[in-house]
Amino acid sequence: MDLPSYAWPSTPIRRLEEEYDRCMRVSQEDLDVEPAIYLQEGSELLSQLRDELAMLPELKDLSPECDISKADVGDPDRTTAAEEKKLRSILTYHRKIFLGDGNAAPAPARGVVCDLDVGDAKPVAQRPRSIAPHIMLRVYELLKKLLETELIEFSVSAWASPIVIVLKKNGVDIRMCIDYRVVNGFIQLSTYPLPLIDDLLIGFESAMWFMSLDMASGFWAIRMTERAKLISAFVCPFGHFQWVRMPFGLKNAPLVYQAVINNCLWGFVRLPAEEEKLVDQDVLEFLGLDPSEQHESEREKAERRVPILTDKITAFKRDIPAPSQMGPVIGRSSYIDDIAHGAPTWDQLCEDLNA
Image (tube, rainbow, N blue to C red; front, side):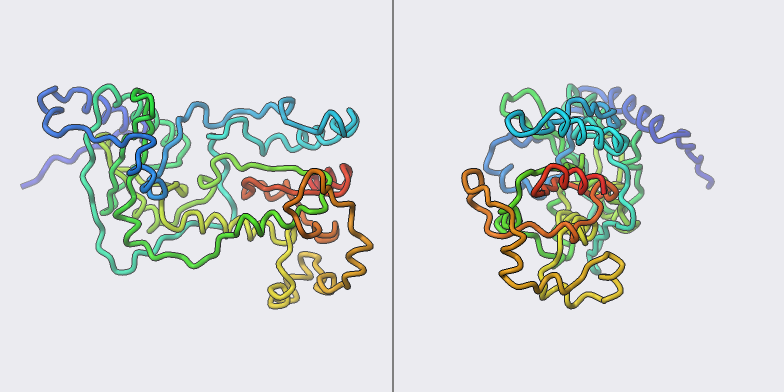
């Protein structure tokens, strides 16, 4: 017996619209079969699950233009108008790589992907959780934005994790999440180390000026491998979807991102001498690094040390790297997320930023 084949709509957005129409035609009697389940923001349960829920931000314009004139540049008591103009001109020159909204969709990073290994585990497909009718439109609008920017796509994966609605403290507004607890139980943990905050702060003892660069929605800059896409699949009343870019909430996602940051900043922030000597000499030469610089005497270090700002910073106990150890910053913008960098002079800070 031949069954009639169903022709899917021509575009993912049109397909989502048809699913939305179907869901909104469901009778009230059907909606009452299974009550909607919510998590309450600020509850102990939500705190325990925070690292295993993929929080989906409230998206508006996913590709806004950045207004460089609003950048926080300089210190009124320390910098001149000419110095601030110089730094702002550098930001203006590179304005195409900046985004004006923290929830904007970044361009994909080059040369890196997120892969997930579940061993020989069999896929687990969980059923979609009920969503109250008055919330349906917000879920639809969020999925539409994610599809338009190709952050997600429709899926035929054997895996499926449910969407969870989190009520904000006012009891009215909501956050939408994906519950990855079951999936995370199968993903094999990476051993890549995360840095300690104290270790990150040590390098700023002698800096006079600081700059910070923040990557908008940094996880979304990383593409997923084909098998990782299948494992990331999630389900809701509007259908079955999977991530094209790396979402929050999956085990190993922070470790993958940390590895990306470390790789892209190689040559900008140096490894300790004992680790650097293990690196192939050709790689060091390509990056313009001289291992002998790491072994200078304490006296030589003292001679090039800039004054310590003890009245401003008391937690830092080590010098910043010498300028010859710096590499390009802006040119690696596809990977940068919450990077702080110090320099002894304003001109040096501008030079490092524009390298």
